[in-house]
Image (tube, rainbow, N blue to C red; front, top):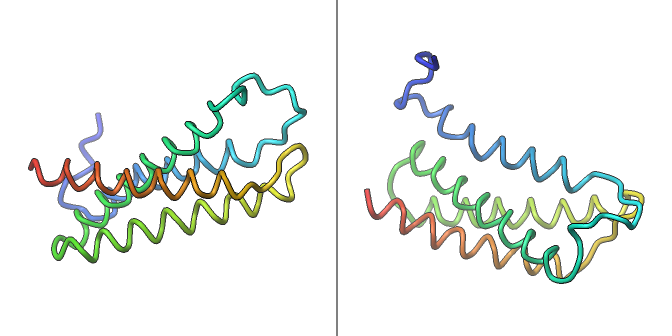
Length: 127
């Protein structure tokens, strides 16, 4: 079905991370009326953590498949990209009705990105 997708084409290494970033963008820019049931308790913070864990792991995968070694370059790129994206998403939320920018959300985004780098590194190491 997807024979046109070749493993050796670097552009396709970035598709998962781009799609995940678009999903984050979509959910981060939805206006809220205060009745969103999934924001109860600490679920919101867990969601921030998991979103950026996955994002940074996917960016690390994409950069590794595109550039190869050295791994430090890939880790730095993935970490910086995910962190900047998380900060920008929080800044955008300051202008969305029913949303607000929270420093605590930024910290959960950053910690998720760090754990995503560690998880992504372990997964690449297993290859």
